[in-house]
Length: 426
Length: 193
Image (tube, rainbow over all chains, first blue to last red; front, side):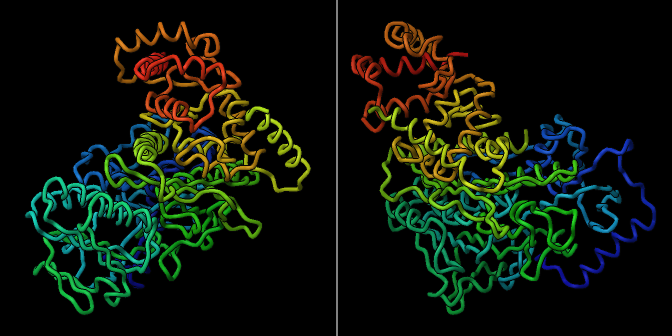
């Protein structure tokens, strides 16, 4: 779908070079103020913008994002069950503007790391002293027949927004007794517990509206995040409704789809589900691929202390696109990484040591409106310069936690959502 | 020996140990506090509906609470897992940071009759310790005025169910009140702006 060929890469680079050579107006502000350009206005990009301005208002921050609104992936599964409206996960950029961030709605098409400038589809060019690239994910063609057109028939809904709305519409339209097929991606991917929370949220809708229906999960993996908690919750709340099949049992999960015929194929079987949610394999967002920031596996190598690219100095990568393990590819981790990057960028621009980082992740999964659970972890920089888990910290909600604690975790999840989106978008 | 006294001794010795250890520069207070605010809200003031605000809390109460979470001495869903990730020195830095922040209050959906009933019960039973309607950052209690009602309710559930230890004076008062009276008191605290 968005695999970048070698040829595209060269094209992107040379067109970026041409724009600079043609002398398009450089939009750097006068007065010698330090410039930070942020590519991408998702969780990582928007958080970094706010935190740089907060730490040093003398730095000019330009955030370039094609969309006027951002739909959070987190809690988008509640849109599928009908517990939340799509508008409930929609955020704009007025908060950032109010804090002095220049928000430009355009698509970045090139980054010239040598000249320290970013160029856009709209023909603009922006000089930077430091650049933060937060492009999220793009998809890899790991399932034959699953192209952009197929995604309109068998939505991935792994970038929230219209895809989420489409999948919801299909669930509403399907008959009672139909099958929902979910095809989760192989590792690594955005939001590791997401497909399994999704199964629970869809089951919540089906149980109340189409109780004869079934959910079949054909995985590309043999195990998954919070597996014990999810399987317990599925049995407890949706007995007999959700079947999870590991990759080993199907010879590697879904291999091919035929969007026209409405069929989904594993190595040996063919399925014709009422609704197919196909989530392809993932890699760093497109701009990371076209500018050489991504490695041969498709993700961006970084120095963990500053999240500065190991390919291009002066460019920091934040969020899902980075090789940040053991930090997960989660919304909270992206938010936490962005604060570390913001501090590092501000310090470096002021000729100071980038500082000692500290990260945290807490990730809630909601399986009914009264049952939720979490995984949490605190991270620090190890002596080897790599992110490491702080020994003894973190872990999962216990399997035997009480119903009242599970209900509290749902309310805490909603509070987390309200607080973190305020932290990201102002 | 009370739990709190034991904890302050543990905390004190932890700080001494930390000071004698050779370690890398710790993260700054704001770097550490930034890890909290994703859940606890901007500068520690939660926009709700359930996660408590921690802004303005006294440094001592912050330290005590985190130490209790660290030792699984206070009932929690997630904070016991998170507290274990920070050294005593780091917790002390966070404590000082949040003590300096202003506790921001947001309107909550409350029952006016309950709030009124709660005001009277508060005067009679709670005001001696939680004075100024629970708005003071006491060293042995969190700020209750304007705290999120679900959080106040969870805390009271933990106190009355025995999951969390109450100070003797508080237990005497709480035991006299019915659960609807306790709800009213909590509504009164939550209603403070």
